[in-house]
Structures are given as C-alpha cells and as structure tokens.
Amino acid sequence: MAVSGVALAGCAPDTNADAAFDEASNTAPMTLATQIGSRLAVDGAIQVASVAGSGSTTVLDATTDISAPTLSSKVDVGLRVTNPEVTVNANEPVNIGFSLYDEQTKAPLADQLIKVQVKLPTGWATFLHLTTDDRGQASYTARVLTTTNVTAIFDGTDSLQSAHSENDATLTVRPPVPAQASRQAVRSAVEVETPVVSVNVGANTIGEKAVYLASLQAGKPYIYGAEGPNSFDCSGLVQYVYKQLGKSVPRTTDQQYAATTHISQYNKAPGDLIFFGTPGNIYHVGIYAGDGKMWVAPHSGDVVKLQTIYTTSYMVGRVA
Image (cartoon, rainbow, N blue to C red):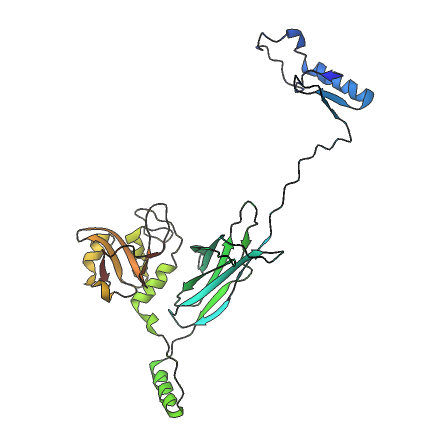
C-alpha cells in the first residue's frame, strides 16, 4: 500500500487546514496508524511514496540499516614539558619548553595554542598563551623567586582531542648563600685557583618580591574598581601587591604617582611603577618586571599579564 502522507499518531487533525487540500484526504491519524499496522501484519514492510514527481519508493523493513553515519574520531594528542626538573638561582632566567604531538604517530602538531599555567595556593591559573612551531614545540623564559610548579593544557580542535601535560615543570630555587660563606668560597677559590660561581641573591629586594607577587596574579580578570584578590584594575593590582609586602600605597594612579619617588627611565628597576599620562592626569600604571616589560591589569575584557612597555612616553615611580 502506498501512503500519500504521514501523520503523527496522537496529534489532532488541523481544522484550519488550507482550503486547497481535499478534506477527504485529511485522514485521521489513528486510522492511518491502523492501516499501516495492518499492512505490516500482512507483508512486514511499509512502502512510503517519495516526494511528488519522483517515481521511486523506499521500502523499510526489519533488514533496513537506518543507523546514523559514523563520525570520524578525533586524533589523540600528547603534551609534555620538555625540561620538567630545573634548579635555578632566585630571579635567574630559565627557558621552559613544551611539546605537542600526535599520540599515535608522534608527528609534531604545529600552529596550535597551548595554555601555560602556574600553581597557586588557590589552584592552577593560566598566565600565558603560546603557539607551537613547525616542530610542535613552544617555550618561554621564566624568572621565579621561590620553587614554582608550571604545567600546560591544550583545549583541542575539531579534529584534535584536548590534552593536559603528562608531566609538570618544577622550578626549584636554590637557597641564597650567606655573605660570609661567599667570602670564604672566594678565598678558597684563590688558594686553589678554581673559579667561583656567583650566586644571585638580589631577589630579596622589595621590588623583586613585588614582581613575583604580581606574576602570581596572572590570568585574573580586569574589572574596573577591583582591588583583588580575584580581580583587579591597574592601580588596584599595584596597591594589592605592595600591601602584601607591608607597604601602604594609595588607591588611584594619580595618588600613587604623587606618593612615589620619581626617577628617570634609565634608572628604573624591577618593582618600580610605570605611569602613563601626565602629572594630575595619570590614566594607567604597571609594575616593571625588567627587560622592558611590566605586569599589568590592562583593560576590560583582558587579564593580568606580562606586557611589553608599549611607548617611550612614561614616567617612573619607586615605592619607598
């Protein structure tokens, strides 16, 4: 039996149907269902007429395969830290690398975004985005003042599975060498004519501690008027960081500029404040991190991050 139309069983017939349709063909749903059921009982198949104008029909029976097409599976991805165990002096630069690859073939995955995370007391926080090169690798230069754990995640794509680094990087900071021990080492070196390796102990300055504390806020959102600990605006970040170091810093950028010791750009040091604008009209501030960069809460829609000082028109203030 060829069925000219199919109605859903249990639905009421449309009493407002277009007059162009013959009312006699508006078959009651339950009657149609009964007719189909009877036909199934006779020969086990339903013949459904195709769209008008086509002469072909489709037969559905118990052997017809109507399963959904098989979706192609995503590629399993591997991600790891290439140098997971590193021992450094405080604030000493060290390169941390990551490798992203096809788990099965080990082929590198290029031009993919990796999120770098640091472990904070409250959990892991993303502070940096890296893109893999043609070898599937990415890296960045880290400076830490205390032992720090770093990891990476890959969010995946339409064809690649997401992944978490199979290992974490542990950046272990050597304890500072007491001054007296350093002098004794120098004397011993002279006596045996062996060179002495200098130890960086400058990380004990207030400014360098401020840089480290600012780095721990990486990834937290900018919200105008926010003073931490979960979100910041630019001057709120400065005030929060120095408050942790026992320093009382005013709240607004103009007040902060007025309260700091003003120095030249050429004499700036890590921890100094970078002010943008003019006295009485300071509109932005960041914490100098060295190498022409600063930690800053940039603007709405962004997060606390390490940013290059983008202009030569700025002023420098030092927290006393």
